Image (cartoon, rainbow over all chains, first blue to last red; front, side, top):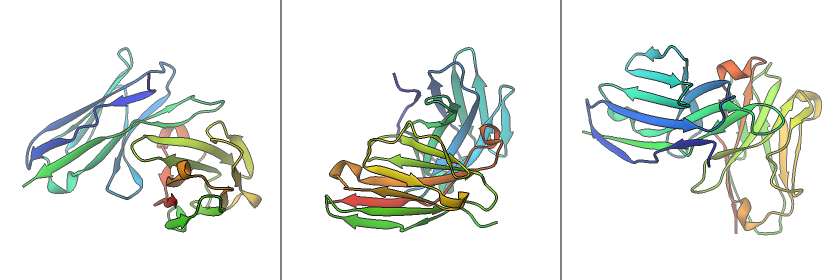
Length: 112
Length: 115
């Protein structure tokens, strides 16, 4: 089983739509959680951290359910510029020390 | 604040040759990481430095890969001899001491193609 699993998509949505991505992680001892955004042929960039209480940053809302080992990202009022791959990332202990562990990413394409 | 800088941005080499990738972390970041994305796969951890010490190299694929961080500043990742399966994008990242809470900042990557 992969440590971090995401639906690869692609999600094709019209501008203004609301879209939700989900992610599950396998290690219950994982410490912290993030959503990164990666544009084509660019580096991953931190979009937001994910907290147990849920957190919001403008049009973006992230939720964490530790009991179900499940993370979500909701994007409201999608913009063309939101088109990218969204990476679910977990700070976990895959080796002897903690490090970021990535999902394969979910591709989002927002159309006019 | 300058970001994480990687060089070169692209490298095409023949199988059996040697390639050295360089990473300059954000100034003051003691933690430096190497990650790799092979086509069709997720980004995978290779190794972690704290200053000049290798903290975790559990992700290094084999002994053809050698990473160094002399003086605790920039880092190099050498692949010798390169094989076809080494092709991919190599990302370097750095972070502050409280890395679990704030994530890492990534460089733009080196796209390595072994032919």
